[in-house]
Length: 311
Length: 286
Image (cartoon, rainbow over all chains, first blue to last red; front, side, top):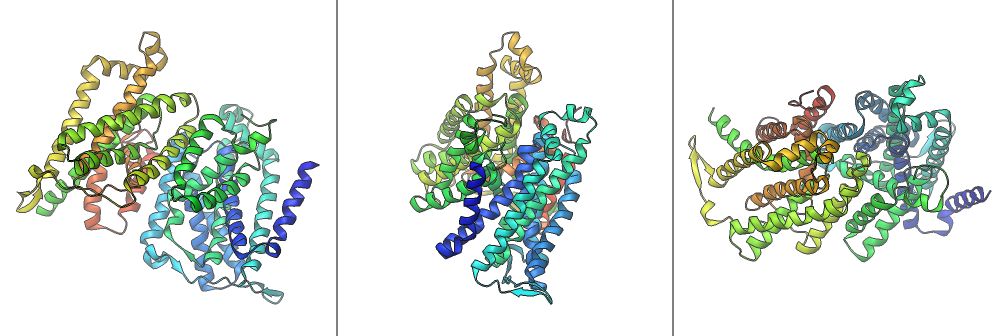
């Protein structure tokens, strides 16, 4: 009951955000929502399935570049975003078939190398991706269904509601997913691959599904970016960017549903606040990571939630 | 033909930095089972310490290198003794995450101490100049690097194959518990191996100071190279790391000439293909 009230309150606060907060706050919240979607997908692989990916930024970039290319050619917001997501789905399914052949450190290295391949394509394939300049001048195209309606997206507040809707949808679907038998199956694979295989479950199939969904979430987060920033650049695909959902998830808590979301809020605000006082925000983050790994592997979420989940 | 020989030598000298870097990483992985994400940062620290001792304080070049190895060794000691030691029993993912935290710390720490600008200290006088190789000028310093890299390879081989310490290390790499049972002090040995690996990285960084820039962020760039090399050669495989370093070093020397656009892509492609087809590395047995 208490949780439901809290969620309701947060939803109302988010829905009314442009009314009581300024442009900058809206911009920050959009970024937090993107990181939340990105991190949720990452955590399906890491927290639920037990696979640590260091290449998620590759899929983020596929979504972002895909959406950007579509918007540049055909300025319609929904087509751009959904097209970018669909494209990422195909890429992550294809790479997933290869990546899930390994687990543990070999999986991490494999995802790292595929992510960096996408980075080098974004960086060097100038005709397609604009090279190190990236793609610029991406329009924040109107949200329209021809013949039905068309909403102007130029005011950022309008675009905020699009992002919010996608984020709610993504979070709700994720909740359904991890509380379904499939969510339990993935956790079973994480805890004991052999035992899960023994009760007749195809470990590979479920890992592939998990990998593809994680890729789709990264792609969605990426596809929502170009209309906001009107530009995409190669660093989006770099492994340094893959580290962001890793850190956010670790901060919030690996073994809880809300961990990646809580972590994304903390990660972004922490960055925003620390940067105001000192340019050395990475060292603070590094110390937090070390402390968390040494002592609090459940993350911030575990401090509030004592029951359930692994320590 | 001349280009081939010349560019091959250039590639070989690049390979030697990579070899020093990858050797420590692969030894630590082989014995401790930890993939140290911050290994590249130790390489970077080696460069910064040498820059300080030699470039700023004017200490003798050789002494400066020795002091940097010692300094990075101390850093490595603290990392292993107070942090890594407590998470050996946990999944690999946590070791990657912990050492990733160290990358962030080291990167900002060097920025705080030395500033964000790249440093290039002067070349020691006796290494200036070039020799003629196939009719082209080749820096003496690069020859020195190639010699040092090969010498280190021999020293490591002797250390592991011919000394009592090396035997203990190999024993605990193949069976930790059994080695402990017959009286090897595993925790101390692990600290020693980690410090040794850290010093190898520092040597690479220190030797690079006169010719490569020392800048924040090179740690992160180097570790990816080291990952590629150790994966190609087989994680934990020392011989593989040497060959892997030569492959990557040569490939980047020729790649820049022949196919500059796809050099980076190609290297990661090789890494992925090796992981998929032969995850134990090109030279891994079994």
